[in-house]
Image (tube, rainbow, N blue to C red):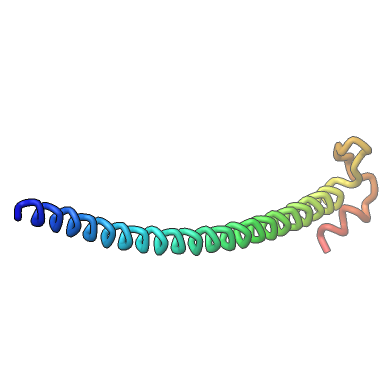
Length: 102
């Protein structure tokens, strides 16, 4: 009799172990699927971020170029012409000076 109860305990323990293993396997599968979804979302977000950063960089370059152009234009109006190396030359024409006051 003792042998039978011991076998049933082993059989019961084995059944419990199989059930727990199946539950754990299902949990692992669910977690794996969630991880895949998160990785896909991260990839999408990362790509969108790179596009935004690129667009912002382009806008900053355009703004910088326009500010440089305005600065150059104002420098020429204020002092006359600029030399080849970028140094400002003094105004030599009275019309250039009057242009600033109009």
